[in-house]
Image (cartoon, rainbow, N blue to C red; front, side, top):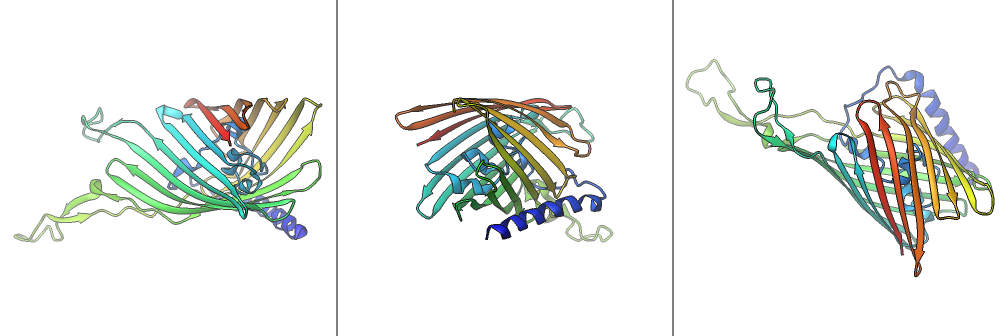
Length: 338
């Protein structure tokens, strides 16, 4: 089984490399549910958003749902992200190991805050205000298949609301991680947000319609709805490696590299590193979306602390990222292991 797994992952990596020349142009801004691409864990946000081959900790589940299979105790996670342009992003997740595997649930919420309504005739504003809000609810499952191989998956319900219009979609994510060596070298791959298309509907799309404007005396104000196009979700294939390195008895390093093949952008790579001292203090750095065309992202930094009290473990992480035009964003994550 192990040889088949490795062959499958290597084939995926070969396909990733072969897909590059076939991409004629990007499809940035054409997919529904872009908030699904926001990393909800401050730990990996500080490591360049790379971590598909890391299978420890609840925060790793976003990169690869197989990380659920490696959890040994119930864990809760809470993240707040002060995103770009005053947008707020919040995430809560809970994982509970059972005898047959680990169950998982999460809620993601993004809010734009109030925005002025502007039209062509009133570019300075109509006096009205609207909001954009996104919500995703996920349920997942993961387990150890063999001593070295873990696998997992999750399903998501996704909803976006823009003023008085909304749309819904369902997605699924799958992932696997394989430990290659006794020293801890791991290979991981995941396919995220494979799902249905979404179409907006709502009061703001309601109109009055005249089926025959040249005919006198007919009903010229029939109620009707405008139809928007069907928008796909942002599918992402990741493959990567992670390698731990023991510096001495008190400290260790973790190196991670991910390669991305998205459905709505060009291929890229992200890399990161974490230095952990006495399993208590962590410092992190990374760089995201290397080689992506017109990328506006780059350096990331982060830090974290761990503590234990009466058998309960507490972990606090901070992640910082930069954007060429929109400035910096700040993420904080609190994790509690019972």
